[in-house]
Every structure is written in structure tokens, then in C-alpha cells.
Image (cartoon, rainbow over all chains, first blue to last red; front, side, top):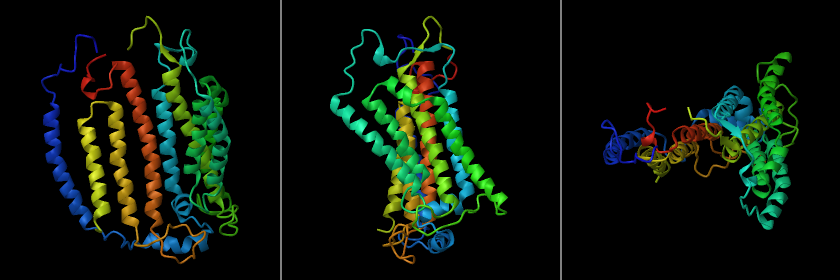
Length: 270
Length: 114
């Protein structure tokens, strides 16, 4: 926007905010009425009688030896859908990396924190201490959550996000350059790809044992044991890798945008 | 009373939608979209709830305890993951809009410019 143009500049075809609000109030009221009508026909809250859920609650433990039925649904009964879900995230991260790639008129500069003449107070000692102290336990917690996906609340998705936050602690407490050292991007990408490929390979491995794709072909162990529930634990670890890689990549791309990418001087945008 | 969770889901949906419609900032718009999406979590979990039902995790409760529906919970998990992915992608687009047009106001974005 050049200085001469202000927010007041509007094209004739544009709808003013007041009109937009009025239109929304009318259509929103209609939508609310329709939704209320639709949901009024649902079974009353707390009176659910869907047969599949109730059945799964009964059979998941004896059949698959997984005490966390939600994980059993995700990684076993509905494993094929989770494969698709995993690839939605994979595609989204790829798209993000593509959108935020270095453009022709941009170059990597020194991190903002290191710019000449810039006074950066940096993180205080207290923040540094707490974040450094939290990195280890966070990674440990992530490993625990991933490894117990089929037993207690958790799994690859939840644990992977927790693992990625460890990276944010490093950024908060340290410097951007320290972050870059512990986050070699090729390795992150390999982690992510391993997770995605691992899920498919564990599924295909079932075919070798003569069962269906993503069937639970491993010995199922004792319910409640870490080494139980067969392939679910392996799939949980694969998803954990993929999610960790994916979120580290997302966070890194956004940090790179604000901290190191500069517009090259003298090149017009376009 | 039994309709309250659904009513709140509808309310969150509409409040988020109102934010999307009247938004002046792309980041605000993306957050409003997350608000719209969070109404689906409430709806899904509200549908699967059974009065006094335990969580469907049978590690320290007897196997035939009354428990809520695990299928909608798994769906909610999918919902959250997809929501995070979509939010990240939309925010990346907002970053590009800022770079290319120098503004984050959707009204200022002119499709014919640049």
C-alpha cells in the first residue's frame, strides 16, 4: 500500500462492514435455527447408544489387548483412515515449506539477534535455567506418551507435539543459532519421512504374514504391558516420528521467516 | 439441559463465523477459523457422551464399566490434527500475503495488484 492510499479507498463493488454485519446477522440466525433443528433430532446428551462405540469398548481389550480403546480405534480398527490423516499432515507441511521457500528476491541474512548495533537483552538467567532444565523432561515425557499410546491416554500424535515443544524451549532459553545446531533440517526431514514411510511399511509387513494391510500381525502380549497391543505400539512410534518432524519443520519455517530471511536490496517484489 | 452442549457448539460455531466475516486481519481470520473448528470438537464429544460414563481407557477400571464412545473421541483427535495442519498452512499464506502486498487486511488485498 503506497502512502496515498488509505483504508478509506474502497472499490464500488465492495461491501461495507456494516452491510456485511447485517447480512451475517440474518444468515447467521437462519443457520442457527437450522443447526438447532438438526441437533434437536439427536439422541439426548448423555444418552448415546451408537452400537460401534459400545461394541469396541467391550471387544478392544480382549481382542487387541489395548487398554486405550481410542488408540485401538486409531491404529487398528480405523488404521487405514489414520494413514490418510497422517498424510494430510505430511501434505500440509510440504505445502507450508513450499509456500515459505526462499524467494528470488530474498536472501538469508544474519539472525536478527546478531545484527550489528542491535541491543538484545537476551533471555534472563531464570528463563534460561528453567528452559534448559525443561528440555530433558519434555523429551522424556514425549517418549513416555508415545510408548504408552495403547495403554494410557496418549499416543504418537500427542507425544510428537510434546517432543516438538522441546525445540521451542531451546529457542526461548538460548539463541537462534543454538537452535539451528540442534535442528539439522535434513535430519528433521528424514525423521518425518521415516515416520510416514514406517506407518505404510508396518501395514505392508502384515501382507507378508498373510494378513490384511494394517492388520495387527505382532504378538499382542498382556493388556496393560508396554509391549502389548502388537503393531499399535510400532505405529504409535512411527506417527510420533512423523509428528515430531512435521511440527519441528513448521516451527522452524516460521522462525526462519521472521529471523533470517531478508528482502534482497534493490530487487522489486514480484 | 440435555441440549446445552449442542447449543454451546452452535454458539461457538457462529461466534467464530462472525469473526471470519468481519475480520480485518488475516491472522485474526485464521484464529477465528480455529474457533469455528473447535465447535466440532464439542459437538463430536457431546454426541458420544454417556451419563456418568468413564473415559474409554480400561487400564485401571473393570472391562465392563460404562464408558463413553471411543469412536467420536478418535474422530476428535483426527479433527485436532487436521486443524493444526490447516492453521499452519493458512498462516504461511498470511506470511506470503504480508510479503507480497505489505498488508494483512483482507480488504486491502487487491486480486489485480502485482
